[in-house]
Image 1: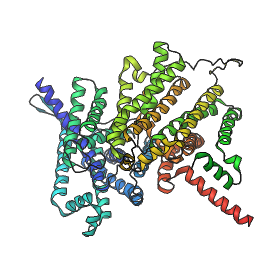
Image 2 (image 1 turned 180 degrees about the vertical axis):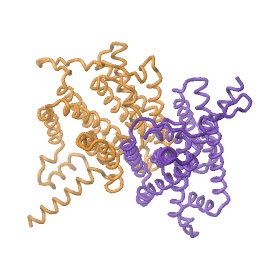
Image 3 (image 1 turned 180 degrees about the horizontal axis):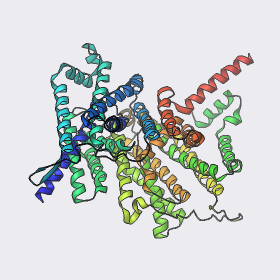
Image 4 (image 1 turned 60 degrees about the horizontal axis):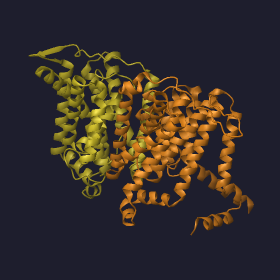
Length: 293
Length: 342
């Protein structure tokens, strides 16, 4: 029994840390722009396919595939900001960019569908079948890689936001764009930087999720819906809250699969979301951001 | 100024009074509905016409809460599904007559909308969007997993069409053929349109607009914002539920995938492409979005890419949608007409 709980705990950390990577991107963008990017889902999908193409077509190693996914994600993020969010920023509507990115998402999904077809791709990595035994527990090297890469990225991102000049400037833009501008911070460049970082994270998590997911052009949607729940549960724009909520959703997923029924995962996650919104709409970790509640 | 004198002023100002009157437009719409199945005689086109009528209901229903009350609701697919499943299960499992099931399904969807409005009271903007999205995901998963009730992904099959209507002095009207089914759904869509239009022209319309523009100022004028938000949500979701009640017997089968959250996005696209905040715009938007993939069928898979692109391009370049485009065209035309007259 203990070993089952520990084993599912590990599985929860694996899937949860991937959700954190995706959700952090959403929350970063929300932090500086107070906007939601629905096309974030398709950046995840694109990352997964970029890694698939690198490893299966060009025969490169999986690590190169992860790098390719990172670059592909960053490029798409740059494009989405340059074509959608940047031109719409002056209009000041919170609704229009959201709807525009829903359109982008439909467009990208169907473009990938036309190119790649609806049949799921079998994404094998050399590490998927390599199992490590730790006492009574099992851990594939793939899962180990996921934990290492995602926690390293999360720590790097956290350090970047906390301690570097650019990170501080980013937080300044998030807090008050006009005052940051008065202090000589170019908010447009920093918003673009945020998009590129957020989308690179999403692309990379796509490469790591690829072997776990049913890899179709619609794979990102199931991830992003949970990522939305995570950012709300954690508090939009709040990095610590997002990390905690992401791991929480990972645990919910693995333990619901073990003890209840896999079909109930989304119901439990979104019941928690609605409960959070009803009881504590600012998220698990309270922030000063209250304009939406 | 009262509504009548205002209308009279407008009529005096504009040259062609009959064309601009609302009664004339409703008569025109009724005439077009009457003629459409006579023009489009193939079952393929009649099927598309019925889909248009159902989608018009969904779009104007969403526009009521989104365009007028300003509440971003991404849960419309859930209310559509609740209406469809509730009415079908009441008919097939409990043997309740279709029209009673229709009324109950509509009421249940409306009640679910009022329930969701409890969140709308506390949340705004993106938070409400995600909360309503969460509601749609939960509803979809319940439809998918409550197998003893909904048969889950296997779906419900052989849903009977509505029973024939037997009015006095008229022949029985069966709904087994597509033309009559179209008349049924299109008349309902027209009635829903009329009811929403009447409501929006009454002080209710201004109340909702006040909440949309500035909730605090509205409250300072004595408007009970939570109550009116609940009303807008309930009305909007009841309309979606009513559309669902007709979707089920039209298609004949029900699977949860028809009510996935992407359906909410499709309904949102209809409202945006048509022109949010007008009633006629989303009605045309629904027809446009429904028929666009059919018209583009010859280009195969690219049609859905174009469908996504049209939403994005409308937001970027024509945020008022079809209505804004129409106003622009009309301005140019009138300008041209005045130029040539002088």
